[in-house]
Image (tube, rainbow, N blue to C red; front, side, top):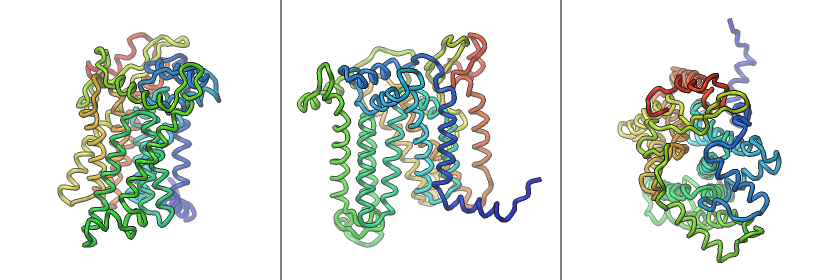
Length: 439
């Protein structure tokens, strides 16, 4: 029998008002989970074949390599290699840090959005257990950096809503810089900058309507309920200028290449070459899939399935079925909350997930892969936390805790084939193949 003493209850209550302490504990847990056996497998897997050599070329200032994507993700992988060496741990340590930043970003986003500790902790826990963050955090690829920078850009933008005076400007500039860094990882961040700008304008227009003011007051006025002291038109100009400037600054190492160094003219020519590479028609791939199939979890990707260090090991990029499929119900519940009650926050989260998927229905990519769903998988965790919080209505029925516990059981079940653990025999993977398309 557990006896709760008064001082214990006081400490629990204190944690609810001290998000930094809770965030520190979550961050330590996430980093430990992501770092244990980070060197498994002991050799390059899946698209690391592109990004590790590209990072090596940046580290040695050798010359351009893998110019299809901008440089930030490869620069960060190179930073890990510079500190820890050109080895599996060195390749993956900075992605692991970015994974922890992503989990903490979910916590911070929900804390700022809802002002409540419980959904923030639940959302972070589900992000930790959704499996795609775990796998991408242990792989030297780009998407984990894209998610971390984008999510924190949105977090700082939300934080700026609550600022006063110069705080708002400083935080807005910080958010703009983070979004510029996200674009420096992958161009797929660009639609999110446009969405952030559109959301900003919609909020300003709504505030003006509620206050009975003309739209021009929302666009140019400084006295605002959100982002007080920040006029809309200068804010949007600043968002564009800072994000673009930061994006171009990330190409600085390329100016010092030993072979084919960039000049100012070459910097702009490179953007055209990148666009041509990203829109080229590629040959069919074994693991290609359509955007509509990603939420249904129809076609995961084997990042690795080989004999390594004396054992059969595998890394299957597959989302936690409970989180991913349950998250779809949460998105529908968030839309329902808007339809029935005009609940703004659930609607915003549902629209964010919808937009993150719709982007890939529009952008000119000849092939799609399940790892493109990485960002949507993050927003699914946010939607789950928001839906539980909204429909629980403060009654503390514990549904979210039970759901998180069940998600943990599912994570433990899949752990051997997402963490390159020894599997015993060559056909051991069949144990986890629930449907034929997973094989």
